[in-house]
Length: 205
Image 1: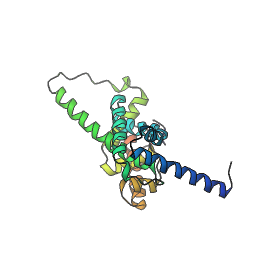
Image 2: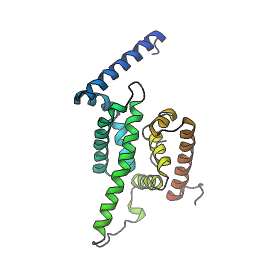
Image 3: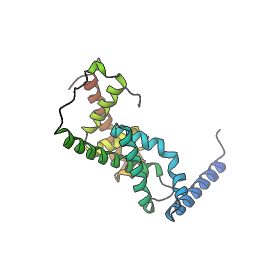
Image 4: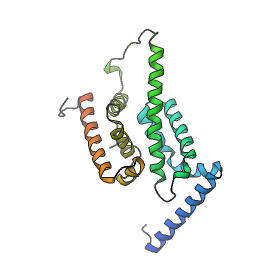
């Protein structure tokens, strides 16, 4: 299964944090004025995280790339609502999660229409699947079966590695609620994967 699961003085830290916040304020202001390079500088450190989220949700490279590009476009249009100094990572991740799910639903509907007039393809035997791909499919299936908010929390926690406070801010809920949702999501995910992959010693449902 996929595995998910120096020190400076106080005054120097304060200066560094202040400088970082000042730079972010400047980049946000420039991006809002239409400076594409400023926006790129803001989002570039988070691109790998966005691709992880989209890939986990979509399972298809082309669709994942589309999801990230559309998420960035949406983020740019909503940048005025972002408060510099909060969590840009959470702001971007929450958009990517929702966009990936929307694109996946649209893609499934499109495929459904196409497959109605085509002969069904042979379904590979389990032994033909690599364990890593089987695990990835099982994870996506388990996530798909979850309620929307629980699934979003799982993606934000595992792939974006957001704190509970960041998840709460991203989803418009309380930190306590985010903790409960994360606990439920991870417990459900573990249970479903145990049943799907037939791990020894794990109960099936």
